[in-house]
Length: 390
Image (cartoon, rainbow, N blue to C red; front, top):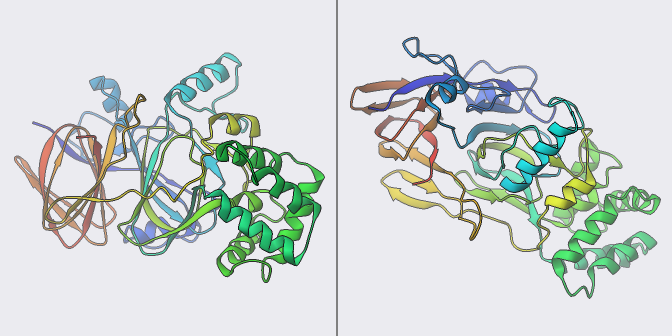
């Protein structure tokens, strides 16, 4: 019979975190500093502690070692109080090759310039917990960017706008056009720096309200950063609670604000493209990006039973299938895990019952189940469950 045990994870205090964001979401006394992420998983950087006293594993990394089983995902509770960096993540082949290359080059795994801290891919689902989660996700349709540049150019013609537009208009391959424009915006050329200043100055009046507010938001946190211009080429999305986006490998994105549950590959590999004081490797980023423009990559929910909704990432034809799904169970409900799983109770407490199990999770508490199991969920809270693909 599978075991279900309590676990707890570390809270990451990255600067972009919401003040007291994680403790508040967990129903605890709010912290006074930025709280960005609660990690729940077996990643070696911060494996979740097993807090049940009768279990032989100190943490989920020890469970992996003892059982020879890999937990194929990492779950996070994310509270963004300020914009995150523009970033993308590698696919499995890119992750393995990049990790091996940096290991061979002797780059310390905690070095600031390290791109690949483990050999794993990091596709991810972001599921909004509250209404109003704001994000940038993927390159928007090319004509939308061109229309914006035309509006800006009409009010204040500039050499920078003209060059940016020339990289996009009339290109036979939209993906190549977006890649060329991105490479130029991140080139460090003086003309780009001038253009950042021009667009920032024009934001209140020279573009649409939403785009102007975006520029002003990003310029407040990252003045002069070329990522401000890159952001104007991306889809802007606001999620209601229970809505999700799917960020496949190579999808450029940046979370702007809000509370959400993230489930991703068991990785901490991040290639950044701006809006950050951390390491930016433009060449490596361009090497992993999918610059194909298109609509926001929303992930449609699938009802699987009373009170239970599944968020299942699409399989990539000819590639490595994603090994996880996310279930949202609003009690009363019954959920079945297909393999190892991590659950997080939010909003209020939940009671989990199964053969040989009667476990109450207070708001913000988490649990781990080491195999397939059917759980009855009771109480007033919502259980977010990351589990292996069915």
